[in-house]
Each structure stands twice: as C-alpha cells, then as structure tokens.
Length: 298
Image (cartoon, rainbow, N blue to C red; front, side, top):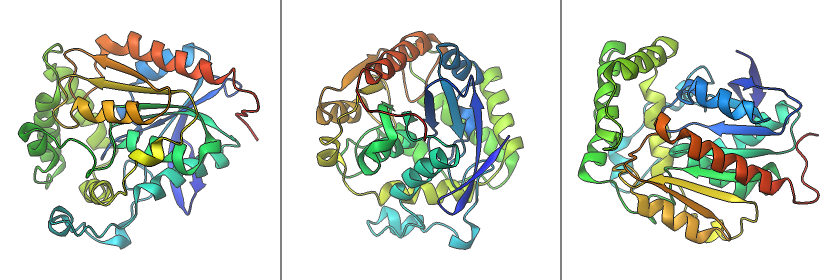
C-alpha cells in the first residue's frame, strides 16, 4: 500500500475507486487498522461513485509508531490526570495532512468509534476539509457522554495482550462481548479478521496511547454546534461500549443532523446493516454536493 508524509508522520493508506470521484475518508477506531473497514464495505461505497480512502491512524497499523513517547500511563489517565503523548486534535490534523498529501482540498469524513471523535474534530478544527460528516457508534468527550456499561468497561480496560497469539484471543473475546443480539457471533469470520490484523501489525502500546488521548480529550458538544455541513449519526441501540445516548447527544448538538438508530446492533458494523448505513452515508454526501463553493481537490 502507498504511504504519505503528513503532519510530521508517515501514514499508510489505500484508495479504492476512481480518484476522479468525490473522496470519502474513512477514519478507524481505537487500536484499529485500515483493514477494519471491511473490503466489501469499501467496495460498495466505491461503487456508488466515490473515491474511498482508508488509512492507519498514528500508532496503529503501518503508520508511524510513536515509540519515543514511551508506554502509556493508564493509571494516571484513569485517575483523572492523563498525560497524553498526543491529542485527538493531533490525529484530526493527521487526517487533514493526509488530504493535503493526496492533493485533496476536502472530503466526506466518516469515522467509527474513536474515528468518530476524530471525524468530529476534523469538522470542528478544519471545517474547510469536511464536505459532510458521518459519526458512527461515537459520541462527545469522555466527560460529557454516558459511560460504558460494566460489560463495555471490561472490554475497554482489559489487560493488553502480551503476545500476538494472546491478542487474537483477546480480540475474539472483545468482539463477542460487543456484538448486538441481532447479529450472531461468527467465530470463523472473526478469527480470520483478528489473525489478519495481528499478522499485519501487532502493537498494543499504540492502542494504550490512543486510549489516553481519548481520556484527555477536551469537551466537544458546544463546539459541535458550529458544524454546518450535512451530518449523519449512526448508532446501535445495544452498544455497551459507547451507549446510544452518546450518539443522540451528538445528533442533538449538530444543527440539522440526521440520527440513524439501528435495532439489535452493538458496538460494531455488521453486514446486515450495510445497505442502510451506506445508503445514508451516500445520501448525506450528496446533500453536500448542492452546497456552492465546496471543492474536493486543490
């Protein structure tokens, strides 16, 4: 896959579809790699005449690992004294820098989980870069939102794996805890995904530093009220990690935002909901095409 230099780091990315089509930037979640955005999901978006760009966040996948920052101090972060190696705002700046490196003035921004936090910050901090915003299974800041359920907290705060093999088993357990009741857990499929991710990159320290960045994030709800691009909020009603009330808070804050609530969906994006989610993303993006003066390339 190609790599771009942006905001002082190297970012591994992949483009799908025609570069001549309007770009959609997919922002991944905590500890997730670009391949977390399923190949078929991306291909379906690209088939709707969009250029789909997925990438590894800093400290994940094949993008720059911030080894010099040292291990995350989770105890301090959980005690209310986070000492982040970087902030979510820096990760939003990475995304804006990637668009620069690709010669793109702006894109439709789609983020999931932590990626939704980052997507919101792209629209807040770099409003000229966002043609539309889609925030999936995400919410406001840690302090402003509704906390995870006990089951969700157990997943979020689980002890990091110490070997690649243990990482696969931890991922399998976490996915089984986060799936909603309408989506039976497919052990074969999930193991294949976990093995693919670990074989591509095994780097738990980066996930810890990203989590500290989440815990250290500034409040966003008031700033969300300034967003003026078409906005979609997608959330499952059985999300134990980021309960649906968080999505509702974001939708209520952004003027004119559409809320898509999905029954029986947990903290994941199962195949059965793809038609509705992709249709809603496309509809949101096409609303932006009617706004005069928006550019997708430099």
